[in-house]
Length: 279
Image (cartoon, rainbow, N blue to C red; front, side, top):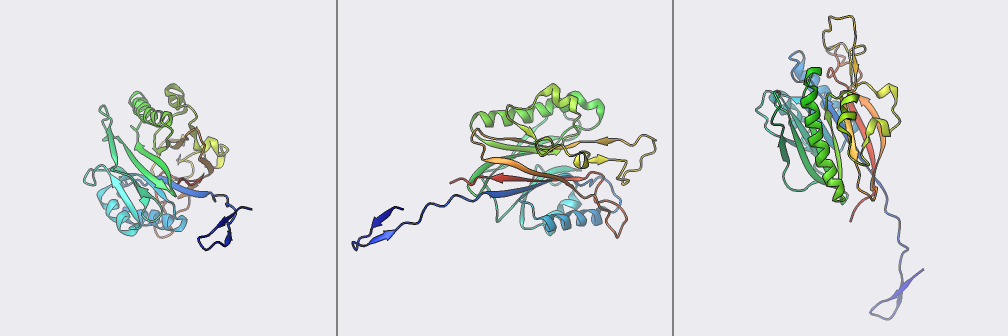
């Protein structure tokens, strides 16, 4: 064990260097279905109560409307909320916990010029215990016929992540991406990037985030009950592997007792990452 000499001439024993403890980053992405006018306030409150219960560090919300924006920012005031504009008919947001993350600079907005549905990409740079992270979120173009435009939007997001990885930066991207597996395969994910559901074991229990066979919020008049993995998360780590996915599960899978409906027609995704703190 090393020792040092003080100004008084006495030897003080230096403590052995302790290993830096790893930190857990918790993130939620959830399409809260603000466009459904039925029980909108009650469902938004249920979303807020779930957030308060699990205490995530980062929130990605989609299909927020001005009413639900007011509710979210009021009930979840411990978070700093960002969006392109809270006066649009609907929009998506990023929120970060004020006490646990430091926002670096302004939120960047990349418009998708060919979008017919007000879609764009939000980018927020943060520090988590000294570790610098880039957070990306979007709500990509909806419906099967918009596959070509959705792939263009996905390519833009993946391209920004790939550029950051080449610069040694870490990025996380997610939201209601409306993706089909064939579209992801056609675009190709960035080098070393991972799909969080796959990286955490590809559990069938947590595969489908939009599941008409188990969630009846949406009136479905057809016999076929689709089950889709529309909501996804991707991690693009730096070469030093300072962040690794640890947990993936679904939230919002229970009905709100007072209204007999689910918080949304989408289930939310809850994830945890193990992070090596930075300087």
